[in-house]
Length: 181
Image 1 (cartoon, rainbow, N blue to C red):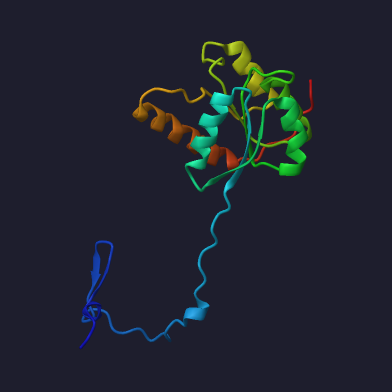
Image 2 (spheres, one colour):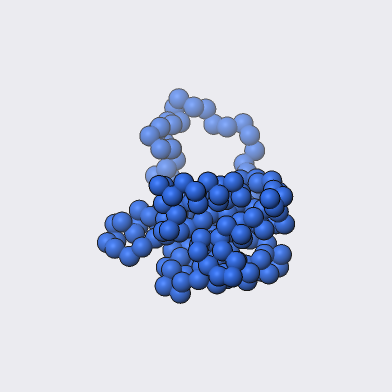
């Protein structure tokens, strides 16, 4: 008895019938010659956030996908600067307002000493707050976006997808060192 698929082969919406396509003259593929495509390593993220609630939300958000690995968490820019050489994150997600080193100073230090993409997540930096937005971008921040807040599930999911997309996009960026001004 012939297998059901020997009569035709369907790939997506195309059907190949044996009567219209002669058998291949190529030798069969040996299983040992088939290698799976390399799996992309997850994007390594360092979270810098002084609010325990916001830190929990961000950790939950990033842990929801295997494409992101949280390599460290810091409560302020000072802790983050000490961690970066050891952890070597691909992307840094930071808050703006923190003590003793805030997101702006952290961005300046990172871009001068350990250049890499930085996503500033802060509710205090609004589109109408051009002074802080411009200062962060001038210092080398790659993007600025509001922190995910509570609220309804659909809104949270939309913000989550936006942030995850930004992280993936930033992971592919190449940034250059910027001297501190």
